[in-house]
Image 1 (cartoon, helix red, strand yellow):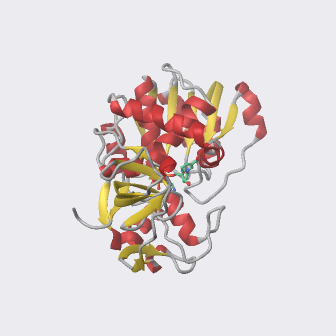
Image 2 (cartoon, helix red, strand yellow; image 1 turned 90 degrees about the vertical axis):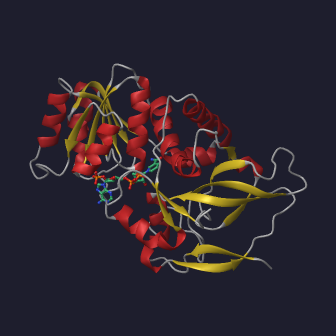
Image 3 (cartoon, helix red, strand yellow; image 1 turned 90 degrees about the horizontal axis):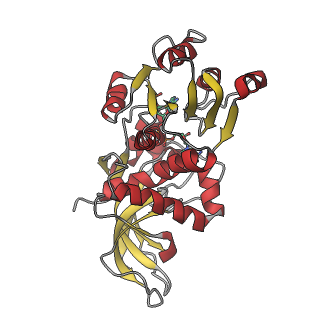
Length: 334
Ligand SMILES: NC(=O)c1ccc[n+]([C@@H]2O[C@H](COP(=O)([O-])OP(=O)(O)OC[C@H]3O[C@@H](n4cnc5c(N)ncnc54)[C@H](OP(=O)(O)O)[C@@H]3O)[C@@H](O)[C@H]2O)c1
């Protein structure tokens, strides 16, 4: 049986324990396709899977890697709408950090000609989350002030791009000059260094109110911890705090009086669970996003590429806040 390479997680643990192994190739069933993976996106959720900290704990051993882009190399006889050579992308949950993956055709989306494999492998989760948050869970308006915590991360940059495409005013919050610079290059209207005055209670909300002339309309929180309450308190009348994630590792508790005041709303955003439960709606959502990518309204960042063997470093960099923008693994140079 032919051999392929894959990153195998044999026990929950730290990313550095992951190894690239040679494994038997998976047979391609009559209703399946085989995809040569040219790039796999590295996401926070992949690290959580490996550490056993995600809400779903897969049986070990497993191959991590939740989104891929590549070329179809084999098509099962019952598959009618796909051809060898098609450029495709997919959100796969697990199995993406490998030379190849066998999938059902309904999992695949055609990669627009305007996107590289790297961009296609790193934009699905982040842009779908951003588009779901700002068009389904709340409605972003062109006149809104949008504050984004963790703005130089994957979801943050996608939120910035979506908000820019609406013509909204954006405030990017990030922790280093390099991250803030990227946010400016990605057309943030203003930036706040979250590492400055981080101990001063109220410093963040004061800064946001100054920049936004009285308060933000939308705060997007991918970080959690004390920032969440700062974001809530910075909202103007009818403002909305979007709860996206807790990259800081701390799930915040929020004072209900601050929600009541000024008729604010706290909005939960769980794109992943929604996408699993509503696959057709999610396909429509992704199609909307890709149409906008296709006509140039949205422009996902080009990721930094690492070889598959560097999976441990790539995930550690993400966990330790060293990543600026997006990162992808490439299984072998083309
Ligand atoms: N709700 C949903 O549907 C959904 C979908 C996708 C992802 N998420 C979640 O959203 C969060 C962000 O995802 P992402 O893909 O944007 O991650 P990412 O690319 O790693 O970005 C996260 C950002 O959080 C900031 N951060 C602050 N404290 C941190 C810490 N202790 N460790 C790591 N990062 C820290 C970092 O920015 P600074 O250094 O600038 O502070 C970093 O750039 C994650 O919790 C993820 O699980 C939720």
